[in-house]
Length: 222
Image (cartoon, rainbow, N blue to C red; front, side, top):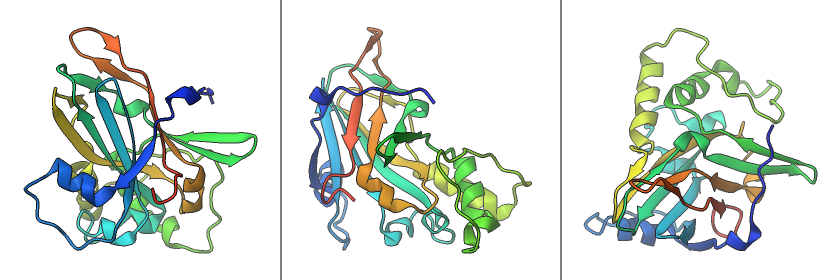
């Protein structure tokens, strides 16, 4: 696996109340009785990216009322991309990675799951059998091995609807949604987690923004 090297000078991550972030993005939305969480964020060159791992099962209920990816060991991360510049920015969602330190000599980078993969893993029988031996890192990214049925289609659609809706952030706008990663239920690894967003392009100028590395392990961020 190709190693990615990070510039420590760009570690501008801070933590803010996630409820306040939502209210700022949607001022007309009614206040909901949710527990206080925090989102980690990083900002530079007119772009701000915030991320909050959903480690509370209750957060999944609205998006996934019947079958929750969390119970299958999957992690959803709510991300928001805010573009305060005068030009649109295009991001490559496929290149986003969840970076985890397994031990001193082993850092793994997980690819985001597609809605198809979320549905398959959420409904996989092996995920519900506590006697099954957990996979070891690096986790493989699979595709459905059985014919999709009604339940699969339902979860797939829910994951798609809750996901990041577009890869273009228009000038002075915000795009938000969920990214999904297969942690196999090992949520304690979030203590070393960073969300790496390397590929953002200023449209019209063919100029790239500096990568983002958002520290999700800061106190209160999960």
